Amino acid sequence: MARLVVVSNRVAVPDGKGAGRAGGLEVAIHAAMHNRQGLWYGWSGKVARHGEAIETRTVERDDISYVVSDLSAVDHREYYNGFANRVLWPLLHYRLDLAEFSRRDLSGYMRVNEHFANELDKLLRPDDVIWVHDYHLMPLAKALRDRGHMNRIGYFLHIPCPPPEILTALPNHERLLPMLCQYDLVGFQTGDDAANFGRYLTRECGLHSSDYSYTVGDRIVRLDAFPVGIETESFARTAPRAMRSSFVQNVLGSLAGRAMIIGVDRLDYTKGLNLRLDAYEHFLGAHAAWRSKVTYLQITPTSRSEIPEYAEMARMVSQEAGRINGKYGEADWTPIRYVNRAYSRTALAGLYRGARAGLVTPLRDGMNLVAKEYIAAQNADDPGVLILSRFAGAARECEEALIVNPYDAEAVGNAIARALSMPLAERQERHKALFETLMKNDIRHWAERFIETLTRPPRGAAWPFALAAGVPR
Image (tube, rainbow, N blue to C red; front, side):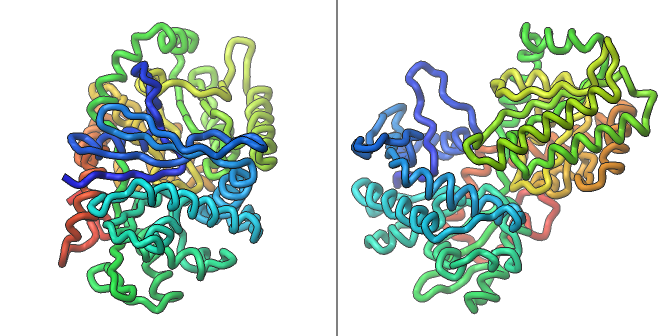
């Protein structure tokens, strides 16, 4: 059997104590490598000090080789903090106003991709199947092709892909984006994302599709949509156990019988946290009967704190939460609990299950797995209600959620009131449909579909998600 080689910006190397990271990418990759030999390559997370050697090292665990490379301080600054997170991240999330382009950072981005290709060049076998992940590594297939590797190489973009009107605002887009055509398969979260990139290839590169495949020289690149799933059954089993833990019991007990709304988001401008707080404030103002009867728990781990915009955002969100608490709070009731720390997925599973409503309202998101985890964690006999932004990729699959426009504070506030007062029968009906959809698109099925499409490209088949409402084939 051909070896699967996964390449991503970061690698979740097991610590040898059975306490590995529990991120979605790690779960997906282990699902893909089930019963097959594999190698996972990427950045170690270490930034070498001045004068230190840039090392690449290997850790062997359970038939998987974890190969990690360090980055120099300059490479980290230009590739990661610079071009990846200050240009590609905002642009691909439709935030042209926040993109800060510099040729130096682009050079660093290309240089690190060349470095990754050099290291992979030492490791690859002719029959390896290569799966590259996310916006950090767009040029990697081109760098590998330049080194003579003719392997099947697939690419998956975990975040949104905007239309060509936005993509073409990227300086040097005509150099960078066509490099994706060096992959055999380019996967996206939704059919809309795939269609946006297809329009770019037609408009800017003069390419035309046949069955959503594009001929580029003597090669064919296929675009397709593969919405990421979660470990649905496993997460559903974890939630009731986690709810009995002392931590979750203490949190729920401190509510003194009040209903809980939960939001869980990394601190990022794409999550629309200030607008979400505005919506909650509107809810409190327009639905006075719920005051002192509901508490909104917002868990927001900080991220990218070295980037000034993120530090300013943290200050503004904290300030807004404090203002709302000061306006509506009582001596025995705090409307918002705003927490800047991370919790384990097990703890979150219990908190999700104990929440009457899940508030997931990003301004733009590739998928948003919090929405799916909230659904999976619910008690089917007495489920909570998911309130979901129409601009999250998950909205294509989760039609039975309360779909909202996150820019409309009044509408989101009214959706909160509706979720809290929704009759049991309606909650059960919505949850049943949502859970069935999640089971059809479990994370293992997602990985299997991508690899199968990469290794045996289907002929004469339509996109699985572009025309349907997110129901897998």
